[in-house]
Image 1 (cartoon, rainbow, N blue to C red):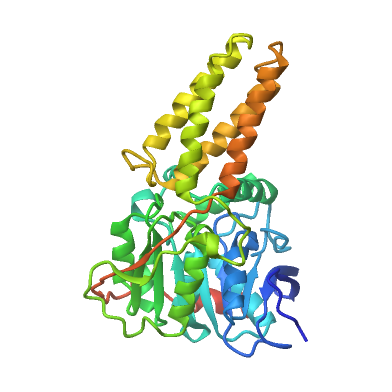
Image 2: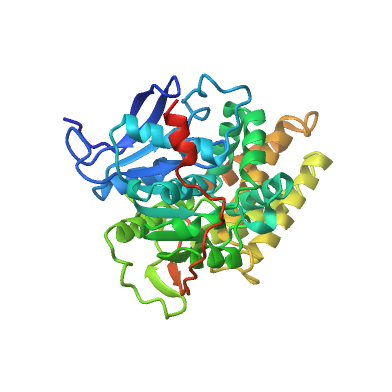
Length: 435
């Protein structure tokens, strides 16, 4: 008997056709085996199942069997033996890898939930093998036609970073480094030109497309066009989220996916504009997340207090000139971006809270670095004060909860387009598995 735990159960599956064992993080809500159609979480470019953990835990707590594999060559799964270094796969290869893993686990049908490049893999499988897919959840579909070059696509990924939760950015960079930058670059080059729109009309499964409000990789125009090409698609926009809504807004996304799997949106009216399907959620109320004591309102009060303190410390005469200058810059910059932040004590309210927290994080790290390097030779008291301010910034970021949502349903008008004449859904997979 497998006892449900909020930590994932790590499994290894031998894939004879690939000559490797694939790693997966698994949450089973039922005894011994999968009693219902599982939810399979598919990671994005050069990542692994690690950043799927927040969503997987919450879906499991709602009674879903959840599996998040590391696709071959990423995370803990080695690359297929026949691959040549750096083995950055294309969409068709990764879809075949995932199908082989499903076959090895005896999974005939699943709910596929992909993020970014994981969306391309999920759509590929749904178009080629409709009977293998119960439902689709497509979070931040790529590639947007406006950015179909490696340089443009990577630039948009960088632009997303300030709008993401501060904790996901170091996690993603660790993944890129551990999986290998050459592999990441090759995968980017081989997936960025994918004409995903040519396959959408072949997707028969009910499909939920999710876009974060601040996603810089996926424009609202492309999200709407993408969804309109699906025979049975619905588009939801999550306020406050960006490209990785499943991580940044995991409590809301789990509710959204749970309701979609349960058929709550199947007859949902789509003529209403900005119809709220999941209300906004305060992540401080999430029992599966670390306790976060600071609301945005309290964080705002601390921002102004911190700015005032820094400006006051800039006038301490017996500290060195660099120390005083550093405190003056920290105080003025904190006051400036606090006035611009979209929270209760903001004046302009144009800066999302996630951007504010990322600036706080960078500021804290810079102050700690300056205390250890730039301020050498100046009075010790000032250096310790700078280090304390940097530590305070980081602790405040870690303790602040960021409400996400609501999730809004965007009205769509479905278009039914024919596939290209040279599109053969089954060809590659059949030829691969007949060898």
